[in-house]
Length: 304
Image (cartoon, one colour):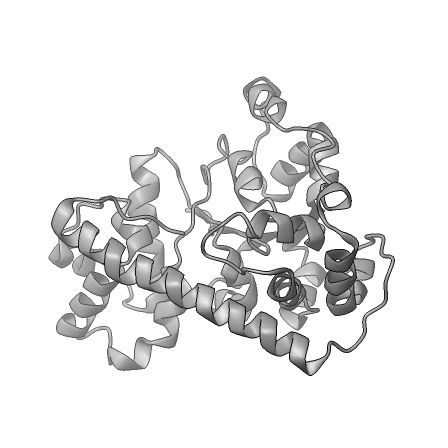
């Protein structure tokens, strides 16, 4: 089995579109797993994983994650335990994800969970030999897209901070670049030049590229579908975003009008309070109301 592939990038940066282009690779179309870094941080709560009781408790908790519930995996825990040549967290993650991959006819698996970009140190510890595709999109277009989603961020101020924090310089990113294990692509370039970039990505992944199969997938991409912020953002919103993240925009070659500058305390307080309120509403709806619907009324779980 090949090492898995990881697509990393801020939410709404094109990770899903990029994943769709890998449909005909041995990885299939990468999905959001969400659990990998979460349970890595909680491993001490489970104790030694070669203890079958600890092992079973961890697996059951992972299977109860909403993203994984969607996979509807049929699993025999005794068989799962006995088939592992070495019982460690990396092998458990691999095994769970391969169970899904095999149902799709894939030889390996891929992941596109956006927040893993912030936890890339954990991914690198678990999968140092994997390859990573890092996609970046103009943060102002990302903000517009994020504001359409109920899970936030919920205003331009927090969108700018979030996008900037996702795309900070990172020593693991640099290490992967130096090892030729990271492919960097900008969303706008991929839209306009998918016919050139997609074969290059397949080559990076040591995958065969079938132009006939890829024609339809590439044909779905809308060239030039970017720069919406120029029409949809007002001057105040543009200035606020760039006052927070202009240096990051420039680092990736995006044009700016304003420089980074300190945001006033009152402005910060207003935007942060708004974000906290909207986040609380979303979490109540997701964890309480939707949780009841999933448990008692058959609502399908989702991975947002």
